[in-house]
Image (spheres, rainbow, N blue to C red):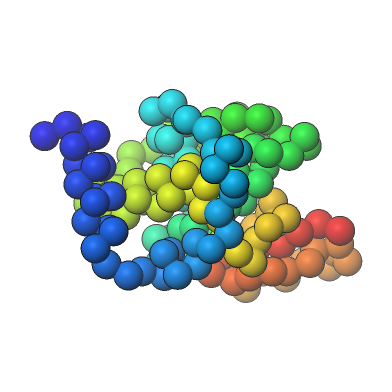
Length: 157
């Protein structure tokens, strides 16, 4: 069975159930703003979601994907998913090279498809940063928006 068939099956099956991602995915971008992404770009987003979300909640998966896409659409960061995810010291070490256990990939693929299809976490419209939840920093410019999936998401102001 090919990955595309597995992915199509996962996407079809996910439509039959209600999930936190479905409930939270009200922040969709306009259809004309959505674009087609290559298999490589999809894999880069999946890897960022997998290695950064701690896979602890669907909300966390969507939140990481939202931050990646917010960066892609910002002039301050590279304008491709792989460019953003591959930036030095921005994401988990080895994010683009480490092995992802196959049993966790279908949930990650579904979340990435939703994000690439235009769904965003509604609380993270301008957030382009996150760090592990529980860490404290002395900076005044970190405006926290959400804690999900083991991460604290914020905007710099």
